[in-house]
Length: 225
Image (cartoon, rainbow, N blue to C red):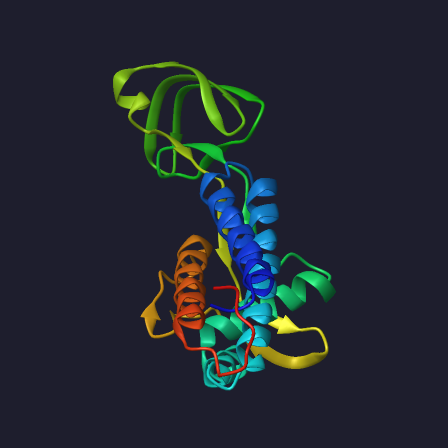
């Protein structure tokens, strides 16, 4: 086994990336989604960089380190996107993704009720969709009170906070655009879904870490076992 301090440094940031992914899954506001996504980009980038550095130190794991570096520098669209999205968080002047707070909608006509709102709808028609009676109160993007006819109540829906990935730019290369990835390490992604991308990236780096541990240490290299 390799130096336990070096391995624990890699593990630390893999775990922090995993924690950020869990926060992303649990987030229920645009602010929380943004914070957790940017945290994931930061910690995943550190974890991958440290894993590459440690792998390249030893001849036995050097090929792993070079393969991971090549993937993140251009050979894998998912890893390239994560790297460039992190760069845009650090250097860019706009959000790295599209974030939307939770809200309540009524029917298919685009009636939207945002946080901290009260609304009464009586005998109205929106784009041909009839609503006879609804009385709604909304806080935090969720219903706190609802009254109305049974048919109209079925048209009310709570919409969770959303985060949609977008193409990113390298601030230092104004013409370089990195599209939303469709794969990472050969695995298909749910297009535009940051949770799916983060989950796939985590599984990838955990496999790579396990491979780093399993490869033999060259003779003369200090171990802790």
